[in-house]
Length: 262
Image (tube, rainbow, N blue to C red; front, side, top):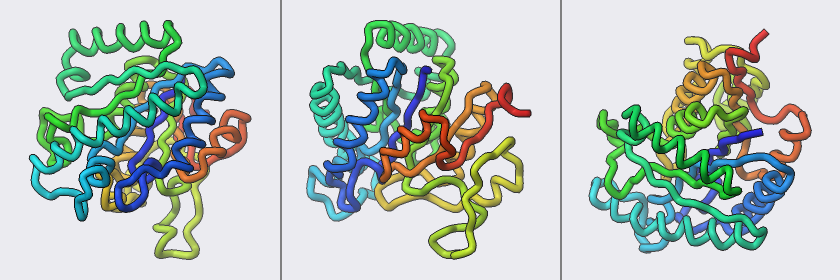
């Protein structure tokens, strides 16, 4: 299978922005194992700003745009250092690709991006993609940016005609209500279509270091499912669930691609 995995800031880092070493080591080990089993993997990673916050010793996520971009520039180096180090331990080569909106919206440039990704996969490399936050201004919704990495992961999955998109988040999946506030909230195992009723279940933004939330994940599901690609939201704090997912067990919430719907 060809799988795009999106890794959120909450999965990568502690609340202070420093890398969650135990979790990331396990995640890279499991992803390497899945790659060894013959699957093609592409990672869309968040965390550059969050990691920069930790590396620079800042008290929190900067509120001004130059501060965010500076944190991203520092944090991206930190991210790729750890990815390269951890995947190299399992004999896998990583490749960094930083994108802006024009790279995915312009047909010519997106065609070059697709060709590059295809060649990297044919060479056995593991592409790691992120929006170029050092120059982009994605968190404030400017039209020339991609938006956030949930959307980017869905765009990448569509571009490379992936079989599956996996969003690793800080929650087990989509619930009937906010499970942090409502003890009666139930996990929804399968979503056949992203309806207005489903969208109404989405809350606001995610963690203090991240920019995503359930609403952005539902937007990603719209993109992926329209392209016939299944999407799964599962808890990134439990990387071992990826084994269950690939063993065909029910994990998190699965959004059915249009071609997979009954």
